[in-house]
Length: 120
Image: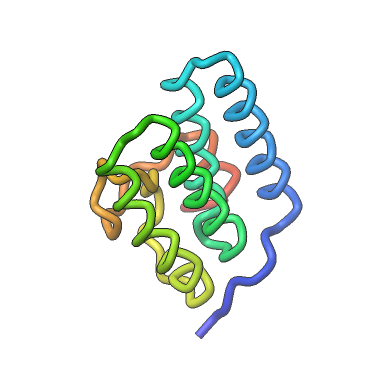
């Protein structure tokens, strides 16, 4: 069994860039754009425990900000379990991480992220 602990530098840079965009749109109150970049950060970081957990933490905070009960409860579960699933390399690739999608559903990966992840 392979354990994922440290995110590769090129993925960390892409992950951090998505979080930068998320914060910029959040400040501008452009919530749909902010969420879009938060989902992308989740896709990039979901195979790594710290980044995966942090994406869910931000999604949980976003749910509170939006007063979205479904998102809040969905994120509490994902926040508690997501990092562990990353550590043992058992995540549904492409999953955007929001409570609007089943937590174990694989989803199509955007082409630019697919190239970063080097998935064939």
